[in-house]
Length: 235
Ligand code: PEP
Image (cartoon, rainbow, N blue to C red):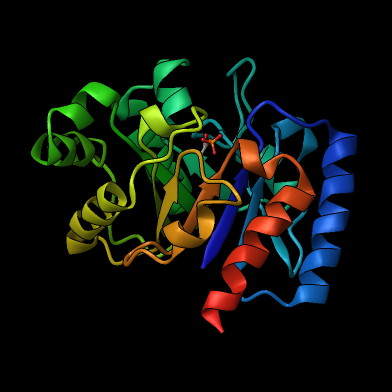
């Protein structure tokens, strides 16, 4: 089971270090059988430890160069970071990232051997149009993506569930993950308003291999309470 925390544009370098120290203590003590990945802002990148992997929320598909405002492989290597989030709906929608750019990022960072948490998700009107429309929309977001890449993790995050407090229903999650599983053998995460109250049920759905958590990951004790809600069911 994978627990991934996406800080987005929250936390500073100092508060990330405090969070990480506490999270590592929790992981050492509790010995949870989870892989934990933390995506802090780029200004707060740290090196991964045995307990927590650190990933970057975004990077440019190049080692270095004239790409004002971006960071690339050279900057990530300084921290030993080899995990990246690609395709998040906020980057697709707010930052206008095209599938072409997203697939370029995927190709570049997969060639460099990165672990890639690749996000897909449909807007509300597509969900309302039914399961077939959802499947068609989601498969288009895999254009140019190698589904057999060995360090791929897919995160299904319906856009209407992100940051809204309205998670997808267990039925919707189950049917979408079952569809994805037909073509993807890599881990499948669910993301979208996962919280301490719904995480146990979500993690018990078949073909859900973990969660990608935004808002509810921002306080370390809350993130911990989510792991402790799920751990007993795995024993
Ligand atoms: C996210 O943005 O990846 C996310 C899942 O956010 P939230 O948990 O706040 O819905």
